[in-house]
Length: 322
Ligand code: BTN
Image (tube, rainbow, N blue to C red; front, side, top):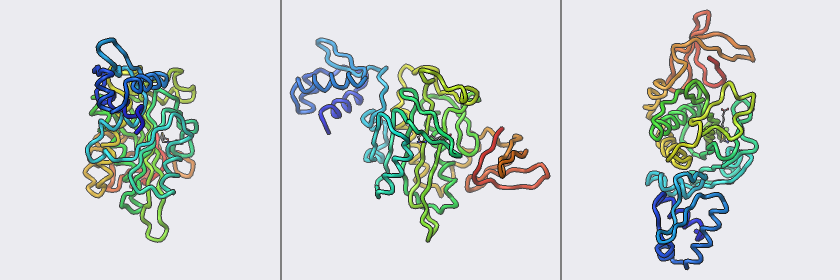
């Protein structure tokens, strides 16, 4: 680990508390001038570090740059050894995650970016991913599930994200099947799960869970075509909560659920967050929208609907609207 990374790790661990240059130097076994240089370089990258004579350095609570050093202190002990790679800007974290998985990464890997230039959404859509306001992360997992159960991963991931949001913000999100997450009637999280399956045994070789969160309103607001649908968790940056903190909690919760999908205990939680159960919805079939009523979620995360002629059907993928 470089002096700069080590310094950032220490400042993150002691966020908002002063630590003197002398203490830092002895803790990290480097000279005070090396500390000074590393502080300067971090400040140039945008970290909000305060230097005060006789007190030393501290990372201010406003500082909110995505970094593995800012995430790791919040991860559960079992997750301390994950591979976390953070990019300033990237095309798509899902794309990168897929590349890493195909290259054979065995460990659970997390790809995160401050900004995506070609963020991907469901149904071939794009996902608006400007810098400084969102969390764009992809997890590479190798769950032991059959391809037909892949929707369960998607369902589990959305429950994990809801748990994390609720835990660190107190806000109770709702889920629009399959996995769009809403707050106050606005979509604030999109999830794109992509699986690569072994044709011979039908098992999922690896799965990429891509999660995009509108943490705060983008500086230039949402583009016109998203104005009606998209929202953010916060209008402006909250006082103490950072994107790193929420990202860590999402990783903890999603890995916890996806670690044992067979338990299916999270399905009841999924239903309690559902914004469609019991409601009239529209289902898109062969490019045509048909009316139906959402009745229940089955054991594999499928949506059970009653169509207008009274026929009961289960949807395992696709698009609905309310
Ligand atoms: C959707 O709502 O249609 C799904 C959006 C998923 C966006 C996330 S952001 C991180 C990951 N990388 C991508 O390119 N897409 C997913």
